[in-house]
Image 1 (tube, rainbow, N blue to C red):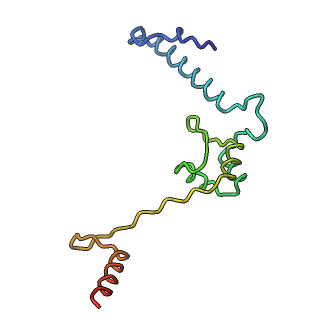
Image 2: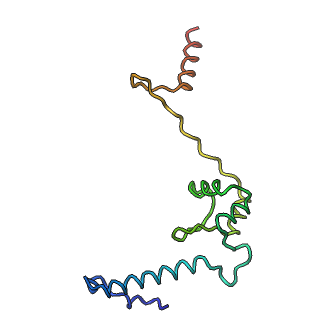
Image 3: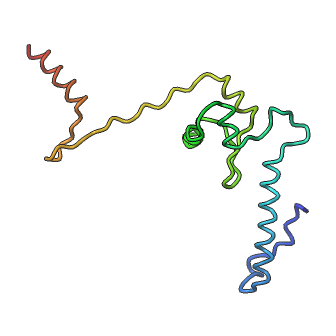
Amino acid sequence: MKNDDSFIPSVSLIGDNPFAVGVAIGAVAAHKEMLFSSLLKPSPASSDSDELLTISEAAKYLSVKVSTLYASVHYERIPFVKAGSLLRFRKSELDAWLSSPPVPAPVPPVRVKRTKAGKLKNSFIDKIVESAKKEVLT
C-alpha cells in the first residue's frame, strides 16, 4: 500500500455522498489493519526472545495468574504492547523486567471514617493521639 494519502477524499468532498464516505472508511480500515499487522508480526531478523506472547502465555511464562498479570498491566508495573484491544508481551522485555530490581508497591491510602456527627474518625490516628496525650499528661 502506498504511503501517499491522496486516494482518501478530503472532508469537503465527502459531504453527504455515501460513496465517498464508504471509500474514506475503507481507507481508514486498511490503514488500521496495516498498522496492527505490522505491530503484531515479529520482524524477520528477530530472535526467539522478541516473540510476542498473549496474556495466557505470558502468565504461564511468569508463573502467575492471568488476573495478577491484568492488574500489573492496569498499574503499568510490567512492560506490554497494546494494539487496539489486543494485549501482548515481548518475551525479551519480560526477561529484562524480571532481571531488574523490584519497584516497591505504592502505600495504600489510610481509610478515614466519619462519626455520626460528621467528624472525621480514624482509629489508628486516634490511638496515637491518645497515647501521646497519656505520655504528656502523666
